Image 1 (cartoon, one colour):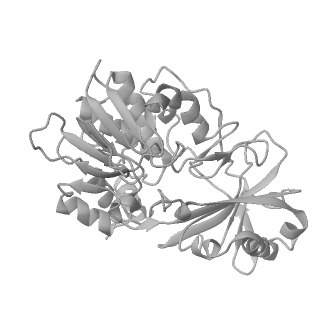
Image 2 (cartoon, helix red, strand yellow):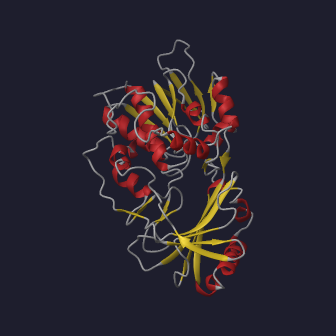
Image 3 (cartoon, one colour):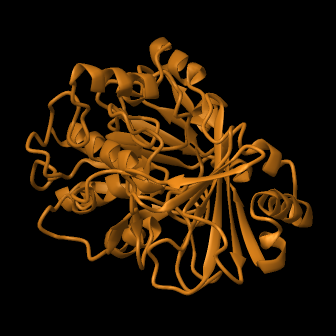
Length: 397
């Protein structure tokens, strides 16, 4: 098995380019500007899930003139992009946080490169200090780091401001889809969707954007079932659970990043980072990011026990400064979310699996989201948005 990390290393050594924008098979938008082809289109399209991919797909379809209905199992939109705007004086990203693609990806989400998104972003300074702790504290410089930080907004704000207004009326909240019948049986509609309450909805196409774990646990049934090749990919793909926590302190006693020997392994990750980096704020907020096995020790704890564990961990690194300066904290455990149950497809997954996960079933059932992608940056908000654009391009082609 070749992991994404190994694939990118080999690609770099061989001088190969890895696609960042556009459709991997050359369909649709060939110039990479994010525009969706086609004019008015009255096809009925059902979108399952109102996360990044679902909202992005619905927005582009509505602009093209399609009749869109979005089915969301929970009572809110955003999926694994979530924001807390009450903890401190800037929005805390409880899920997807950084822009990990060219800035041009932001207007591409709108399908209008000239539309623009008024969002300020700031890069990391390569000279920023970072900490590494393996029983002893070692300080070094961050070096080149591609991710960009939002200054006054968040990924959630981008979608709430520029995408949601045009599709909100099309979202049916608290509506879980449990079956998609895409068999040709003589009825007018190509696809028949069944909700958990037994209600039926007809469509010409459906874009499935639910987390991969939902498909693995067969909480969403397909009639006929998915092709064996796709089902095997679903079962083989490793999915990481994940947790994020944010701790406010009286002062910032920590550097931009703090890592440990197990911060980046084949089975998980964990690290602390300055969550107020680049923000217009005086608040000192340290974020904890943990996925896979790196998240499990934290997920096993609740309330004061989790707080004390994190403070003890930081006190060991920073000579008790965490306990002396602690104010409060918040926690988001994505593994515990009832309609999500995961963080994202593991960074170390076999790089050949995501394109199979993305493969449509005929021209009726399409897939979009962080795991359903023909690109290398699976697990990211950027790639979820790109995959949605590709699904729409297939429908409108």
